[in-house]
Image (cartoon, one colour):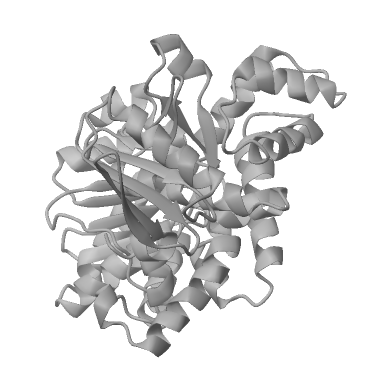
Length: 422
């Protein structure tokens, strides 16, 4: 059992830390009366979102006697059990008689946490809960919570958040001065290769930081949590997926690739490893809207949560990095639950968003009168015969243009400009 004085020490220490820390705002909004579960990859910035919310409440006149923040990864709380959770409330009421808003960070560490959260939600406490494992949103837990908390998927910085964290406020594109535009492009070059994990902004040795984050995810959140002993196979699997970002990857194909590299592994084991990686928010599958149900589930394309991690695993990777960046941007904008697809049935389209009627091709470098230009635009013309498409977009690294091909208007836009247009 965790002593009350230890919990009190943790709560008051957190108050001092949050009061002093400088936090860059994120592009997430919250209903002032709702409770939330924030889920996402480790180090994607969930804690800082909590800090920012708390700081906003403090600025609006809410005092610490009406709030509490606790991070369950604090070493002083190691061994906390379900029976200890109510002690947090008891300690708060020993310091204040006001009903608190609770900020519960990485709560999935504590067994059966969801029962505690449900009881508090039923008692009309407002809650912000974070976790780094999708299993905390399994069907069983979702049933227990019964819609009491709204789920938000948290990603590392968007490009707009990244430039804000680097001291350049997002503006309308036509208001950027020449110097500001040059700074945006310079920042994009770094974001493109080193990604947007929030803490990495302050690091000079970004690759070392990214390596530590990647190791923590695959060694801790995937291998250790799921008792995987053969970690070499796991690392090799990620490398092979990284090299195949632009292609559908069936379980059988991935298994055969690993076997050809000398690994002894079954299809079922590969399926499990993929599931664990999706649970840890390292990988995201995007499915083929043109395929049947079985094909959609077994032959998706996989993308990594952040370009910085992908860049650790590949080389000569400009095209892969750009497509991964577009994929993650779409998932952040439209959600990870079957709102973003690719199309592959005699025609190959990199991304399709049915909600928007939006078809996207990704091309690192495209110009007129090239084979790449003809291939990408012809695919759009053919796609228009099968799907309701209202907007056609080719996203590039730096090319920009507007063309009309067989009556179809196609915008060609660099990623950084597209990303700042939302």
